[in-house]
Amino acid sequence: MKKAILLVFTFLVSYSMSLFANEIYGSKGYTKSMKEHLISAKDAVKLLNKKNVVFVSGDSHDTYESIGHIKGSVEMYAHHLHHSDITGQMHCAPLFMCKEEAQKYIGSKGISNDTLVIAYDNFRGPNATGVWAFFKSFGHDKVKILNGGMDAVKAIDPNQKLYDEAKERRKNLKKLIKEAKDKTLIEKYKKEDSLLKAKMKEITPKLLIQKGKEKVEKTATYTINMNKINWDLIASKEDLLKASNDIVKNGKESSKYAIIDTRGLTEIIGERKMDNVARGGHIPGATFLEWNNITDFENKLSFRDLKELQKTFDKYGIKKDQTIYAYCHVGAGRSTEVIVALRMLGYKNAKVYTGSWDEWGNDMNLPINR
Image (cartoon, rainbow, N blue to C red; front, top):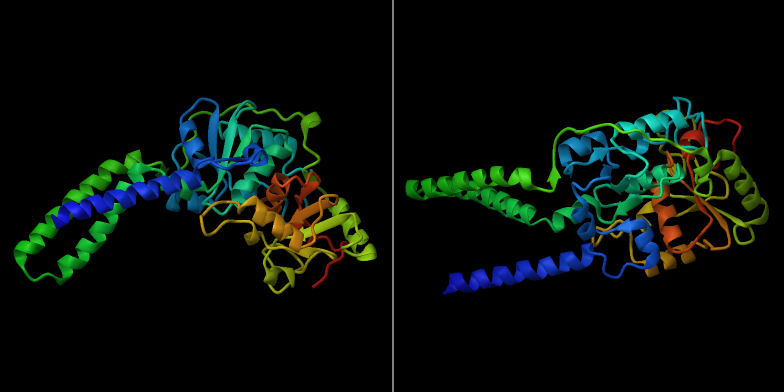
């Protein structure tokens, strides 16, 4: 009787958790502006293995291979999408990459001009938005950010649930085997462990999140039309210098510009200096709004509720009638997370400084504050 009650209770808990996951990771409650930028896990998994759809991981190479990636996806580490030389010089600024290099790189991932790109990362958002901004800047409109990334996909994968339950049970069995003194009981535990191991092996190929090397089935031809470059999304160091001078002269309240530094405090004050950058510090006149104010860490979603985001930008004095520039270290990551949030809220003149501190910190002619 107790066993039957326990089974019913387990079913009800699992069912309620499933409903919660569908609500959180489905598209319920998405506004029009959110739908223009985001895709829910529930909707995204329906597109797996579909023609002209490519899932792109913005996380690092090590994360892709060792932590995992969405089955069939390709890797485009966001930090490498901003392409500068060792001195921080971007030869085709404010483009993330020069046209020819970008065309070759995108095509090598099996992506053509009519491909729907679904950008994702673990769940936090910066690396996924870096991929989004990279494609959008080149005029590729068919690109979405998977809200909640890999974690959201895991949460709605029934095979992942079975796999995780078997893994947890095996973990408990190892402890029981170590503590048990009865040989018959030990053999019973070992037999169960063996069955669970076989079950996990059977489930592994069915999981939506896989580990291992990237497999691009076939390359594609990708063409960038310079007339379709989205100049309204990207900014140069000249743009930032003009904005910085205006803010310093007129003050943040009166300036028609806003510069958002999305990095952490140690980078902002110059205590932490990143590799290959000559100077630490920040752009004069910048507003310090760290990227992690944007991510919904509680629900493991890439963005917090739009009302909460609006309160955040209001708190930091970011106005919709300003031209807003956001920067981080490489311009494809933390800064793009903030830019996407602003655009979803209707801030039309929100742009990413593609060179970011990698470029600014290495240019001795540009002013810095510490």
